Length: 218
Image (cartoon, rainbow, N blue to C red):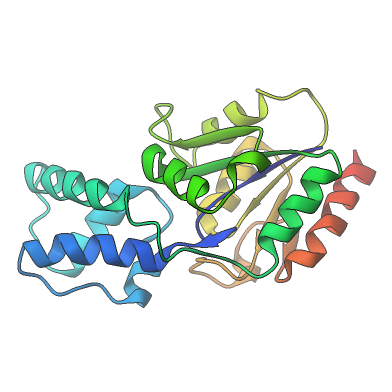
């Protein structure tokens, strides 16, 4: 079976690294650091949107030129801010189990390519994934379905599941017409009941059971 995962908020909590990168940039411009709560609330739609929200929160004029400068500075910091990310409980163990059981695993994230590759290397995830799709690799971003569909098209036909944590992931799966499992412990901004999903889980130990249900329905 083909199982595609979001990264931030689904497998790893990278908010402390994002907070560090953003706060370094804000400090250069004489602005207060972001709180962890603010950081988590800004995550989900890629680095450019994150920077726009960061600028708005600190009342920095969001001209195209100023945004481009801060985005470049943020990405420079972000690529190397990988020391504080942690796995959600049980995530790595379940990925290893699914891989050992013969499933095809992939990542599909709006996180920019360079920091995404850096953090998956740092956290030992590279051997587990057969495909990788990150922000900037194609001219589209979630919630448009293209990134997810592009990832799935690299595999043979068969049952598929997308696993994510947010409204963005849910909408991506809906548009791509791919079954969606919502991890309820990530960065979602609305109640679970308001988010499209086919399954909801809080404990990664239950994910193999969801995978078995998808296979049985195929």
